[in-house]
Amino acid sequence: MRKPRDFDTELKALADKAKALKERRVRQLGELVAATGADALDTDLLAGALLDAVAMQDAATREGWRKAGAAFFRSKQRKPAPRSERHAEGALPLEGGAASH
Image (cartoon, rainbow, N blue to C red; front, side, top):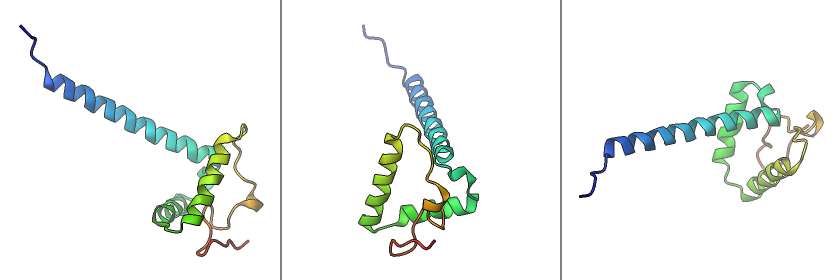
C-alpha cells in the first residue's frame, strides 16, 4: 500500500524555500548597492533612480545600462565609476540620454 502524501509538510517546505530565496535576493540586492557605491546615495534619490529605471522605455538607454552592468560584473575589482564619470543625478542619465556634468 502506498504511503499518503503529506501536503501540509510539502507546502511548508515550499514556503520555507520561497522565503529563503526571497531573503537571498534581498541580501544580494543590498550587496549590489554597496558594491556599486550606490549606498552613498540618499535613499530617496536611489529609490527615484530605480523607479525611473523600471519605467524607462528607451531601448538604447536600457541597452547602455545593461552593457555597463555586464562590464561591472566582468571586472575583477568591481569598483564604482569615479565621481567625474558618474551622471550628475546618480546612476541614471537625464531625459534624452544626455547627462549634464
